[in-house]
Length: 465
Image 1 (cartoon, rainbow, N blue to C red):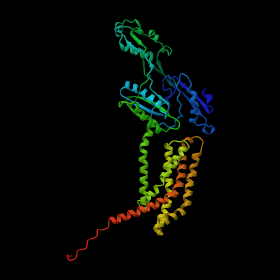
Image 2: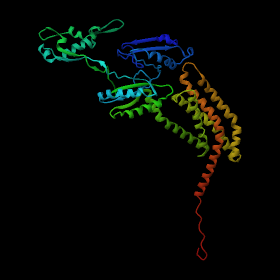
Image 3: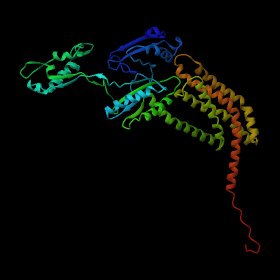
Image 4: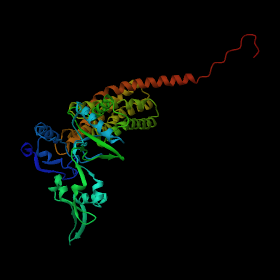
């Protein structure tokens, strides 16, 4: 079925029943999980991207009875976290396993109702069939059999004990002691396992233990930081960003009244996103402060560096508009493009302000004439450098080949930011320059008036001097 619906596939590999590895939430040793790996043709040999193929397969595979299917594009770089069936991770921790098992399904059900999320999954599996064996100590003591012998016998039969190792010229092999796999599924196997009593008589294991198979329990208990943990994973719905999903999950925690003893944390890519989101404003602010200091030293002014920095907001607005227009999120790659814009766009204002200040100081021109002359003379260099940067980023914005999903936001943010800032800064920079010059003149007059000495009152007539 999968092969028929994925003509872009080169190979399709399946494994199940606990085989394979844990990458991307595969079998991981649990018999109720499986994995299908689809290798696609190179990007230039297919029309659809990996996400488009997933969107096409999802409604068809959801109709498979008795199975829940999760799909995600393979990630070349995983940012921490544990392997899951979907892309982003949300982990709950609690010292009390019972409380954790009680609250994890509640937050899972709430997350499944959020429109920002899809394919919400959990690694919690608490309804596995269990068999509990209780040793009948009175019966065991009558046969002279110690509980440790019963425990060792059970491990020999069902625990895969390594009893020997032999070597060949090319490899070594372990000898594993266990009952046949078919017998491991039948409770009557206990009647076929015998222990030796103190007098040498064989005693069936079923005589010494009472088996109860009516209960349920977890197939496995994950831990993180020495505490039991449950990982809830999710993908993003189309048209929603990771930032909106994080806020929706935090709001869901408050709505259901998650107790303080249950500690929620984001893991993997979601955790790195939150960490970078918290530090990005400070990094950008530090970069702007450094630029301001360098420009202030260069022009020996507190005012005109602000004129140059005033061109930056228009570049950011243009980059965001381009990303919104083409349906891309503000991610790490697009943020790199915005940071590149800081250096590219800033040079437009530098070329005008530098020429205007030089005309004021050398030719003694008034500010209005100096900035007007700077706009006329520096228009062509500004357009040439802007077009060189814009045309250099245009292939990134238009490419459709392999890896274009990663590089396209970079090109779009640069092209959009340059287009908008180019149209705006040619008009706004001269205006801001004149207003900043007037502000600087007013500040100089204010400082001069503040430092003037107070007038000495003249003595009145008839007074001795």
